[in-house]
Length: 499
Ligand code: AHR
Image (cartoon, rainbow, N blue to C red; front, side, top):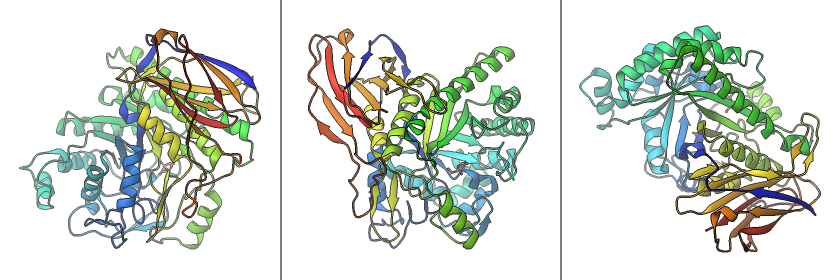
């Protein structure tokens, strides 16, 4: 058995965890909306057509914020189509499908309320611009007495929706994006949209598009150029990152959070460099508003898009997640928590059916995928203050990285003084005896230890076998003199808690 050690101290803190670190994302894409959150006629649908079984699972994940309506979809979207009685059907050029607009802004805000979450709304800076952006802020957030706010009232919503967090477009550097822009074009447009949106409602916060990925050729230059134009009027820079394991290289795949960490640190450096250059007081934070595993469905999606072009609510991006995906998600959550001083918003992409922790069958059941569990546990126990984790772990090398620690961890001090560690053992072969040095916390009661493990890295959850991969409670670790040894199985996600 390998050995590793973690030392924690309540005074060595990363920073306060913003609850919005456990956000998610719903796009008008595939069956995320239609057949996902919304399915009138389903036996579990409520009077507004929202699936009750999905709402239950979303509440279990406890997501404080949900980004909507896209994604690539938003860059060709007219928000006016999604409110009122006249809902035109439109071609969605982002996903080669037909959008009915049956579910729109009002429905989303109602659903969000029932789900116990807050909307994070993206405006279209692809085919549209500052004017449409300011108009939707006025429609959604202005109390009344203007044509737009009165239209909201006439459409049944007397009180403003009060949407606080807004995205200035989506992945505007990507050639696949409808209305993609150069960094300068985007920076200018984002700045003007931001100014107008904040003039309408000064209480809102705005996220500007960073590069759509760390390995975009324009990464870095994009951030610097667009921030030169819009730094003063925005609050966050977005990051997006998806990983896959198409070659079946599990050690290499499980090391990918190292890329995520480097990505975050590089964007932080760029934001701070521009801040210095511009003599700005305000410090920008990050919104990691798309992250997950995404690759399983790629082949199937090409077929669907080719053979069923302009179909409705097609089963796109329906990745079926396996056990090793849950482990990578665990290390991604650890990475977000270890960077909680600067990453204030993060959205697992997405929430239902589309690269999602929650799956449904039209007219049928709803179940949790493997990745549901690390997310649910981190969201439940990861609120409080992120602590610095001093990890002494044996390491391994793989194709893209040297010195990957077998033990990957984050730790959070809760408001009642409880200490929670999230630990992934990346080792394919050996268990690890993990020594925790918690002397700085004084006397601790026996803890709680949840383990997510499966002997098959390819194991999945399905509608008929939904708990193949699910966490189990194991023997309670008993601290003595502030130290405790916790056995951490090979290839496992662990939640270790002390009061
Ligand atoms: O989440 C799926 C897609 O991934 C989003 O629409 C886009 O923003 C990203 O490329």
